[in-house]
Amino acid sequence: MVDKRKKVIIIGGGFGGLFTALDLANDAEVTLISDSDHFTFRPLLYEYLSGEVEAWHIAPQYKELFGNEINFVRGTVETVDFENQNIKVSTRDETFDYDALVLAVGGVTNFWNIAGAEENALSFRGIADADELRNQMTRALDEISPTLAPQDAREKLTFAVVGGGASGVELVTKMSDLLTDAFNRRGLKGAPRVLLFEMSDRLVPGMGEDVRAYVEKTLLETHIDVHLQTRVLEVKPHGIVFEHNGEQTEIETVATVWTAGVKVSPLIENLDLPKDKSGLLLVNQTMQVKMRENVFALGDIAKVEEVAPILAGTAQLANQESALAADNIRAFLSGRDLKTKPFEELGEALSLGTRNAAVLVGGNVVGGALARDARFALYTSRLPTWHHRLKVGASWFFEGTTPRPLQPLGYS
Image 1: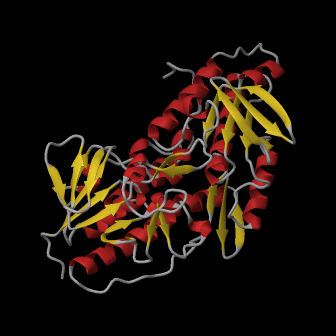
Image 2 (image 1 turned 30 degrees about the vertical axis):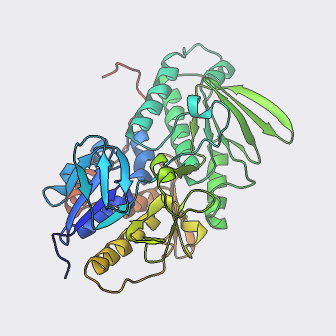
Image 3 (image 1 turned 90 degrees about the vertical axis):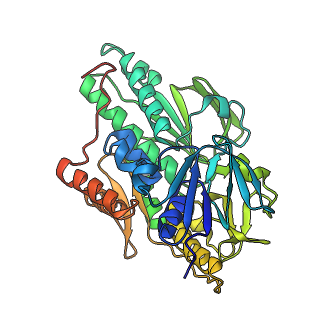
């Protein structure tokens, strides 16, 4: 039995932090600290971009999720004193003491020191990022006349996505469907151009060959311009410079969106804790940071022993880690032995536009509208708290998940 007066502080409100907090709510005095006032269910951020879901579906306020069971503090963590076991937050005068600490701040976009990328490329990690991208697509469409020649319209509606992993593929297919639909609705000539850049020789690395084959087929059918084995050299305000087979090319773009990886947050960089060469925290299979038994870490910032590379950085891994972390925090606070458990690959589900998806079921890939519906059903079950799942599930069932067209700005 855990003494409910024990204090657990969780820094970061992504999958790992949020679900650990919810799991521990009845066992200790839990405080979650985040610089945002809401959670973001990132696997459905692409559907928010396309208008298939609303912001409240995937970005509920922490206070709405927590009620009175969990303390929520909005602010930036300034210092962590491991010896005295307290934390200073930018928005509060007092410090926060802890008996157990959970580090779950997640990563930040990694621009890999590419010239102009951080200054000029759009990230795609939150609601504000999706809003900005949607606005840029709409503004660009508004500037195109129906009398413009097809080749000129194509040049003026060129977007680039950097990173051919799952995030890049899901984003580029949504963008292509939205822009193509807008061309048809507005009577524009020709078609938009959406470019996808990937440094390696394959898309969605880490996923199975059957899924990859379906992804490649979809991108071909939707006329997305895929550039493999291509290195981005520079991102300009309205252009991208890249190299393939030693030849450099520059293309004008409306915008470039960056999905080519994440790195640890500045907070983690500045903490005096054991890390690997990439800056990830070294974490035991109990989810404890090495050499700090009352500090737990999970998610994008943690390098956990014996975790398969295919799971690294995924929401499903953070969910599984949160359950183990919560169990072990209870054990730690009550003086019991901590446990380990293997983390499993729970299946693959990719959105591939507004009408299509790919879901791996029983070793077989199911695609099309059925897979799209299955993906929504799967993610309904993974939303936080039963009451939020119920509200969102009812909304999707009764109101549907029809995409919202890119209407002209000011249109009502």
